Image (cartoon, rainbow, N blue to C red):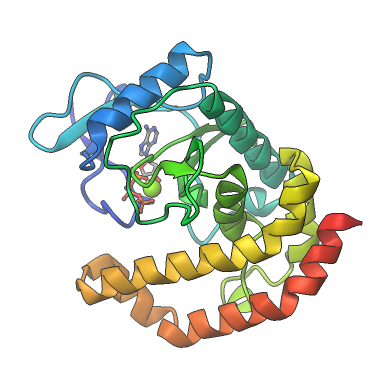
Length: 264
Ligand SMILES: Nc1ncnc2c1ncn2[C@@H]1O[C@H](COP(=O)(O)OP(=O)(O)OP(=O)(O)O)[C@@H](O)[C@H]1O
Ligand SMILES: [Mg+2]
C-alpha cells in the first residue's frame, strides 16, 4: 500500500505517514510509557485518542489513523467558529476526566518541553493546537500527537490549549493572520464555560496563560538555538522575538480584562 505524507505538523514535518488504517511517525524518547498510558486510557473508556499499534521499531511508532478533518493554517472559518471552540474545550475536559482516573508511569521520562512547571497529578496533553485535533461533523472528535504530554495541572492544559484556540494573539498578529475578528476575552470565557473550569482555576487562568506563553517562548528559543529548519523559517517569517515581546506585553496588559471576562 502507498504511503501518504501527512502535513500539519512542524516538529516531525515530512516524517509522518499514513499507511491505510495506520499512521507511522517518529517515536519520542518516552514512547513506551506514553503507549502504556494511551492503552490504559482506552481500556478505561476514553475512545477519543488513537491506540498505538505494536511496539516502536527503529525509532518509529504506529498508531491508528483517526478519520476526520484536521484544520491547517490558513484556518478555515469552521475551525475558528464558536462551535469548534466549545467542542475542543469539552474534548479536553473528557481527556482530563479520563486521565485523572488512569494511572501513569511516575518514573518515566515525560517530556519537559511544555510541561507544567508546577507539576501535577494527571497527564496533560500540553499541545492541543489546531493541527492536533481531528474533527468530525464540525465537532472535535479526537486528540492526536502526544509527544509533549506530561504530568501537570488541568488549568495548565486549559491555558496551553486556549493559547491556540481563544487564541492568545495580540491585535497586530491577529490581523496579520486573519483572526482580528475573534474576541479573545469572550472566547476564553466560552472555553472555560464549556470545559467546566472551577472558580479557583478561572481566577488563575489569565496568569497561567502568561506562564504558558513564557514556556512556549523558551521552547521556541531552544529550537532556534538548535537550528531546526522548520522552526527557524517559521520564526524568521513571522516576526521573530519582536512578535513574542508584543504578545507577552499585550497579554499582561489584558490580564484585568481577561480576569473580568472569566468571572462575570
Ligand atoms: N493518528 C492520526 N490520525 C489522523 N491524522 C493524523 C494522526 N497522526 C497525525 N495525523 C495528521 O498528521 C499531521 C501531522 O502529525 P503530527 O501532529 O503527529 O506531527 P508533528 O510534526 O509531530 O506535529 P507537531 O508539530 O504538532 O509536534 C497532523 O496534523 C494530522 O493531520
Ligand atoms: Mg502535531
